[in-house]
Every structure is written in C-alpha cells, then in structure tokens.
Amino acid sequence: MKDDLDDLIYWIWFSQIAEIGRIKTSEVLLEYGSPRILFEQIKASSAPKRFFKLFPKLVESPGLGGAKAILKNCRENGCEIITYADSLYPERLRQIYSAPPLFYAKGNLDILNELEQNGAICVVGARGCVEYGVNVTRELTRGLAEAGVITISGFAIGIDAVVHEETLAVSGKTIAVLGCGIDVDYPQKNAELRKKMLQGNGLFLSEYPLQTKATKFSFPVRNRVMAGLSDGVLVTEANLISGSLITANRCLDQGKDVFSVPHNVGSPGSEGCNKLLKDGAFVVTEVNDILMELQNRYRDIELIAEKKKDSSVERLLGQNVEKSRDVGSIDLEDLIAGLSDGSKRVYSVLQSVPKELDFLVSELAMDLSDLLVSITELELLGLIKTHPGSLYSI
Image (tube, rainbow, N blue to C red):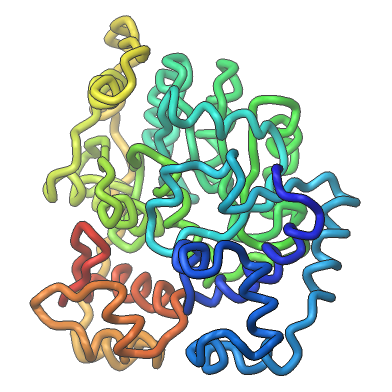
C-alpha cells in the first residue's frame, strides 16, 4: 500500500462514487490526477457540470466521514487497501472496462506481484457439483498449481472451494474474489478453508468495504474482476443457466481464453461445458492443454509429466453419472414478461447488430452495476448473445 493516509481517505470516498458505475477510474485520473483533486473541485463547485448532475447528493454534502470510518475499520481488522494508483494493483486489471478504484485485501499480497510472472487461471464450476466435476477440478487444479500457475475462484461452496483447497494442498498460490466484505464469514461452510488461505498461500480481494453483505447483485459485478485478473477461465462443471458461464462471457469480453472439459451428454453440469466447447472453447482433457497455451506468454512454465491413464479426464468421463432432469421449454413471451424492469429496458434496445456496453450505459442512463445485473439475467435466460469486446445482441 503506497498511498499516504490522507490519500487513502479520498480513494475510499471516490470508490463509493465509482462503484455505481457512472464514472471510470481511468477517466478521473486522466482528467484530474487524483480523487483528492476531484473532491476539492466538487466541493469548490469548480468541477464540470456533469459531476454535479451525476452526484447531486455528494455535491450538497461531500463529506469524508464515511471514508474515514471505513479506513479506521480496515486498520482495526488488519485489512489492506490497494488503490488503482498503487504499484500492487495488477496492470491487467487496469485494462478492463470499469476497473475497480481500489481493493480491500487480506492475505499474501505478494501473489499480486506474481501474476505477470506465472500467469493465472480462473477456475469455476457448480455449487451443487457432482463427483465427476469434483474429480476433474481436483486433477486440473493441482496440475496448474504444480506448474506455478496462480488459481483464481470465487470462494463459493462446491467447485470454487475445491479449487482453493487443491491449490493449497500442493503449496500453490490462490486468490479468492468475493462478492461481499472480506470480513464477512460467507459462506460459513468455508470457515476452515478461509483460515488455511490466510496462513500463507491465499489472498482475499473485494471491491466492497468491510461488513458489506453478499447480495445477488454483487456476484455478477465481481465476475468481471475474476476474469480481469486471469489469463483465461476454466469451466469444469456448469449448467446452461449458471454464474460460471457468465464468468466465461466476461473473459470473452476481455479477449481472454475460455477452457472447458467435456461431459457425458445429459449428465449434471454437462450442458454448460459442452455448449462452451461447441462455441469454440479450448477442449481440456489434461492440464497440459491449458499449460501449452500459457507457454506462449510465460516461458518458464513447464508441462506436467504425463499422468497414469487411471487418473485422466478421459477415464473420469467414462464413469456413469446421474442423469439430469429435463427442463421444459419456456415460451419467449413468458420469459420476457417475467424479466425485471431493468432487464426489459436493456432487452428493448438490443438488436441483432451488437451494441457496446458504453452505448447501453449512455442510452439507458443506467448505473453500470444495475446494467451488469440486467445483462446477467438476460444471459442466464439465453435471451441475449455476448461478443468479445463487451458487445451484446439479441
């Protein structure tokens, strides 16, 4: 953490503005140089009119009390703050749309310095995972960690927890990106895993201040960060309607690689993974399928020696797994009628010609966080298509 005490207060203040999505960190730094200068100009009523329109309440009372309280809370709980201007802030994350102004962090901060040296893969899957998904995730995660690749996941129960556990088991490095404050014991089932991660080889990151509870809105927003920290995403188990596919789409938005393992047709978690493969994702039947792609960027990565046949993904794929239940088809009009108001607005302006995220923000005058939630809802229902470069169409 390189910022002095005073600057951190202004960064925290600014993060409370920027998280609503109507302003980009990079734009503010380019125009003003720092959040502190922006604050002073708003308070002096010398900032551009657009800021007064965007933040009327802050202009009326642009105090720092809330930011000071957050900083005090962080100091008392051993929570670090990494700002956009900090040298620890990952350069790859600065390149994504609406990069977070700061992170609240706890754990091994040195892992952030290793991202550009060793590479990172985001591994995601189902919460209610089956044995096949667990076994495949264990094998591939261990292989990545043994090769020195940093693993990233969301600390949920199921596949996420397997990713973090298996990485630690071989002394690898792992990052958990949370959709809540890093002091919130969520999910409680992962309490022991949290302790293990904080003992040395794990790092927790969150955009949200301490004591912020998890909501259904915070997870879609944080997925862009998981993708942004990674060189690509590996999906080991996913249904067609799943947060894992949303993370994969965020990687596509950012021009990152998407990897997927094959599943038996009709088995639980098969639809999402097999769809990714049909759409052009890299087929993964062993960890070297991923490592060979990473070797193009990281010369020090070495392939893992071939494993015995009885531990291969092909063998696991041959196991009998429980058939998934058929989901009846739903009428398109019924789907649209059941959308939230925000999602209906987004759907109404999309066409077959892809529209940029910037266009949607401007056209709909929506907060970015609300817009991403609506886009997630539409993606989960299969009502819109995602294209590289944050483009969307029907």
